Length: 340
Ligand code: NAP
Image (cartoon, rainbow, N blue to C red):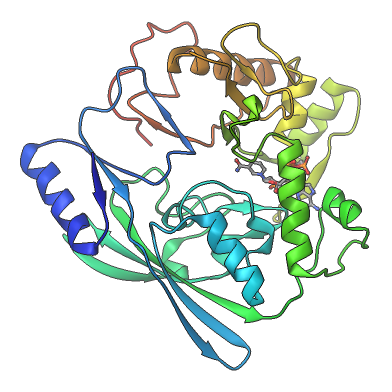
């Protein structure tokens, strides 16, 4: 394992791993990663590139940030400087360089909306390049970087409005907690504080005092389905599922709602891995659970949701040295890298 603190270190780590014929794993804080019980047989490069450079131009500010900077501290700085664009993304663990990978989002805001470009080491071409936002292919919790090891993110360039006000707020729970109306704005610092407090009640802020925060955050992505699938879910559940317009006649369903209605309530599972007591989407390690136990629990939930509702949940974390798409009741052999 090596800390990479400069771009030169990144190129050196790639060369070293390639020369030895070993895989390379680039890690931030590891908060969205499930590592197999056999570990990872290769070089782990821990992203630690520092630095925040700010350029002001009128009402806009451009901020160039090293991939190793802590994400939550960066959000706090943005809010305190009056830079609008990431105030809904407070309380999320990990480092800045990890945020474009899955276009981190929460409460209706996505990091890709504020990203101008991402500087990467391109392993295919063996050189650094700068990818603008369009080239990053940002989608719902997705980008070209997700589940690919071609690019290593070394810096992220953001552009923000200079404003103490948040973006318009749409999430019912947030709007309620702030005492504003749907679509209103609120002071960005209050939005950040309120969201961090909400996340804490759901075990989504990593804390030594909270056993329900020992998780990889949401384990499943909210599924985006067509109208026929929504109708099937409604028929099976006997009630209308919460759903949100996802464009092109498609609807986003709340994975947590499906999980709970399929018989996996908060606190489910009697083993060392189970559903968080605070949020049905988080799977927690209650102490000493193996990756196999965690995956068995997650697959039981996926299978239960599929047989009840006909919807297949996809996992959100990155799997290292273990695979997700193993048939249920498989041999338990979980070596090697996950494919696409
Ligand atoms: P929630 O408020 O209980 O809502 C359930 C789901 O409904 C959310 O996942 C959200 O989708 C969707 N939703 C609610 N209001 C919506 C609206 N006005 N428009 C579109 N979609 C809406 O959700 P929660 O689980 O407590 O999470 C709150 C926010 O934090 C969510 O945005 C969630 O994604 C984010 N979060 C992410 C992680 C992670 O590990 N990635 C962990 C915790 C929370 P979206 O998820 O698409 O926003």
